[in-house]
Image 1 (cartoon, rainbow, N blue to C red):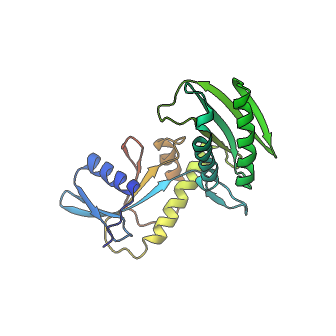
Image 2 (spheres, rainbow, N blue to C red):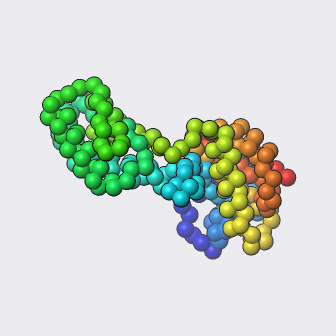
Image 3 (cartoon, rainbow, N blue to C red):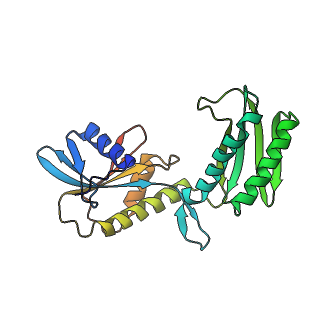
Amino acid sequence: MSNSIREEERFVAEALCDSLGGEWRPGEDPPDVYLTNNNSEIAVEISTLTQHVQGKNGQAVPRLSQDSGVLRLCDELDNELRDFIQPDEHISLTLYAPINKLRKFKAKLKENLIEILKSKTTGGIELKIGEKVVKVHIVKGRRPSGKKIVGIVANENSTAHITSNAAFILNDRISKKSEKCSMVQHRPIWLALFNDYWLSEPDTYVNAMKQNQDCHPFEKIFIITGNKKVHLIYEI
């Protein structure tokens, strides 16, 4: 039995127990956990619904794989430039992922930010670094987090069609988790999905589930939101 439970798996397991009652324990991966409820032990496989974007080869990849480097760049600039920024100000950066040659891009952006701070410019500035536009806003006030530079990442490979995105990532998770759980003999088995694609509401997944024709072993499928609300979207 595996005792290695990720934080998001623990969150989902606790949300299920809070909503449905019972207790949980780690599973063998698969399943991730077992839920004891009404004298019945249920195998529960857990996953996360996250937005996908188009990758280099045209296939869909998790958006975070393209955004994470840009977010890390913002954290590095925060550490390196915070002493240059006035105590009652912070900088908001809007960047567009994906960015190639991040080190070179960061060096040029840092150089531009230092010049902006030295000139004591206020308000909004638009920079062009290579083929990318960066929007810089000098903002009065302190962030609750204490950060002096915060990044807002837009992804040029994403689609604004929320329903299509939701259907794709839901079908992808069901397919992948069905394959992973193909050798699990325990019944019943449920699928619990944490919704990290915050643009999509549970009702969107309910409608997407109605269109799903794939065979899967799950007797129930749940969506769990960030406030620990549990939504049943499928039941045999």
